[in-house]
Length: 601
View (cartoon, rainbow, N blue to C red):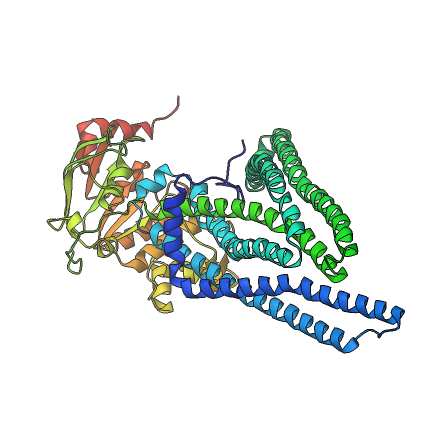
């Protein structure tokens, strides 16, 4: 019952074309290369200052130790002036390191935000350029996942991984160099822990990664269950399916709990294991350091500095393992984003303008199938004059709505042509061609906002007076004014604070405001009661005056006054004529019409 709502955020996947995607990603952020270089410089500076600090702190320890020994021997005391100078220098290093770190974080946050903003803009533009066939085949959750999860993953991981990669490498090299300046032998002994620690980290990451991926997937399933339980609570109650719904939720929740435990347990092992390795190394260094200090090969302060360096030596290794996972996830997310941006857009080679379009339409030997191997419109021919009211009727699956979609260029033909005022619709500029039409669908679409804004969607430049006039023409003005805030009343997110009939009247008013040359009404009255249907019918009659209109209807009583009725069956026109003519033929239309008024004996 649970549906997957796209990819789960944070799920680590591998890119199919890592190098190719990395090149595309670098091209996107190349616009900010100066800022990125600055961020790297500040990151390196911050790291170097942080690395140097322990050795300077060790000098202070040595100074104190030497002062105490000198006082015991009676040859002097602690040089507080020297210690003060060292501590001031140390404080300056810490402050500068923190400042540099703040600046590089600020720069990388800006870069990651601007890069994600740029990609979101490209995706938004792309959504309006994709053919309708893409949306028919693609899962909505996957599209949403690209816009939200993948962009967010890209943004967060870029911000975290880019400078961390630099600082971890610099820290690893820098610490080793500083240890070598203190004692080469101890530095080499400490470095021997590197391959051992790396193997441990790689093993834990490899084992835990699949459980993190499963955790995020099961989280998606649990989210889907919760969404269904909330959005479909009425249906669940009506069919007494609460127990079944809870069983599905408990099943996925149990899997989520199990995957989450394994993921967190394995990843949680890294810190104590690395601590064990670090402590083991610390013990060895402490013993050897003491031996070297007794023999005079190293100072007490240097032992302190070296131990501090050795304890920090394993941290960059764990960070690099985490960063590699972040980069892998970032490139995988980038690949999905780029694959989406590389999808084929609809072709717009049109040059003709629609300024003087009258609305004469002709279908000539139209052939079409959603699948090229399965043609559903075989040889459709029809001629419609400007201002005519054309009804398209037929059984479910006859191809009625498909013909309208082809007329609006939602899909391209497999054969034949459609002419508008004698010109092939492919020759018109697509944007101008789309403005010729307005559509009122069976399923109304309104958005969360005021009624005024919803109506103005049909013509964004319309004045308040024009909006109100359109509502009056659609017989919607009366019910709007009965609402508490009138035209400023808010339609909620679910659009359930107004009735179905009221929604339909608003969509008709919106179509009126668009002032189209061609109006399409697709089952506009199928979901309303008889009284509301009469209101909508009157509104539609006003809208259709002087416009070429196509009416798709199952209720044949609503299209009796159509200028021409096209009767479709299995993708072809089987009958053409007016209502009375078709009834007198006693053919396919008459059979459909009479079946709606048969009396049950």
